[in-house]
Length: 143
Image 1: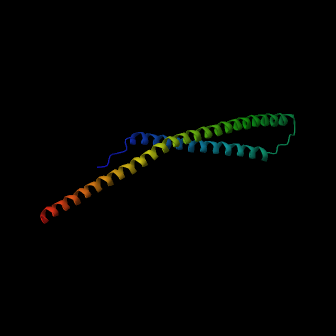
Image 2: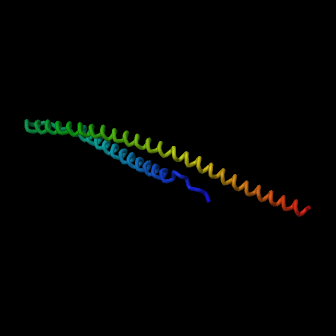
Image 3: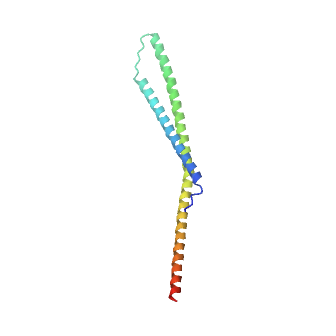
């Protein structure tokens, strides 16, 4: 009966950490894309607005709207910068989790190969023993 990999529990934990890090990276990428899309839509909306000031009240309202838009765009740019940093952090965490997992996966492969070689060696020893016993039995029968 083949033995299980002694570090199987740790390997499973590392794989779960890798999967969690991959999920976090995917979520960070989605949030970053949403921020880029919101910023693009805001720029497009501002670009397409064409306001003409007819009197001083309209001019003041346009100035207030532009100041508010400028502030909103600055917030969106700051959010975009933060989202990009989150993606980079999530990517680094995923890479680290993957590196921890890969080392154990390689150990598991070597362990499986060593176990298979040991099984083959044991089987060959049994076959050799059977062949030797049969030869000795024939020798006794011949005498």
